Image (tube, rainbow, N blue to C red; front, top):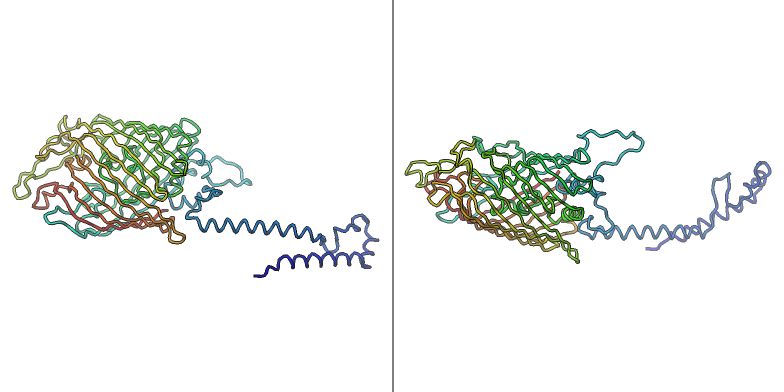
Length: 538
């Protein structure tokens, strides 16, 4: 294409110059000069009041044109770089805070991590209008709202002969005679209501209490409800009071909106019911660690959020949204070390543990099947309201320790956690609860694939293993789990995600199958299933 900008500019400037010179020599010009009380202004070559046009030297036009072309070239270069990059926030000169409203609208975890990071918490507030008086905000004006919902359908593709019925602790739709399910429906309110106080409120509108006559109905239940009191202005030291996730297990802390597998691995997830409990928590997170936790989320590396470089505390022990049964509390402590290598690779290693006494909620079972009759409740259990012997209410030793290693997907990632310990479990005769050893964990390989116009893909493969009592289930049945899950998450855009996985599992059915089938309770299920989940972020 022929560039006519410079010739046209030159011709235009020359025309103005010649026209202004001719006008200055005309009779009209002379008459104006003689009648004007300010002859010094009229004789100036650079100003013509009658036309309002100031003739400019062509050399100045050339300079202006060259500056404009340089600016256009720079903008074109930046635009091309943004198009080629998989994510705008990965650009060196791009400030992700400029897109805070976009992330708040679609990704709940990014909004949360910014509020908890001292370098960005003040920037997420909307800009003030300088023309209006600065009035103090009400506490509710400082809250932000966000959330997500997950819709699932599962289909069993294979069941081995003699297998127990399909059952999955984390997903009740993975069972016989089930179709679509709203797995989660979360709305989150959070924000700094005071310079030293941060609040976080998260109900779930898709919970189903175990006592419900119709377990498929949706009920509202508190998931998180706590306040963080900051002991310093940099948000490095904070005390949390309320119901919150217990810092045990990196995958347990990772939001379900960010996790790749549809459900958490049983080895660590069996430690705390709903991953949450009511208590008092202490967190220490230096500013460099705050920035690390924020960065891995903003760059789409599937981070777990800010739960401190070091944390410790006490909590009830029975699990979130459940009644406390004994006077004992659980103690926990966690230490994690986030690292960024010279090549920009992010990684994290950690260790965590807890100890306490756990009371097992029981129910009647028939160890010989329904044909023999004679239902019994295992010795050492209590009812959900805490009715039972003093020894049963006091509970059984419940203590674990676990290690964590996370290599963030840049683009290849690896994640593994393993735990050992002792806890309450149904004995081999299935007539009493006793203290037994446990072990388990998982290992997962991840790949992050960014595309120019099809979003981001996360193919993954995970193996999980667990041997031990499932204390959060009725009668704490001893379970044996070996499971493979292959799948991929497709982040269509910031507001929609689609996940498809294929499950190959050999796991203990933790429901009381002796009341509904001819086999003994807590039989083994062996089979395969395909699983689909669509997630919306708002």
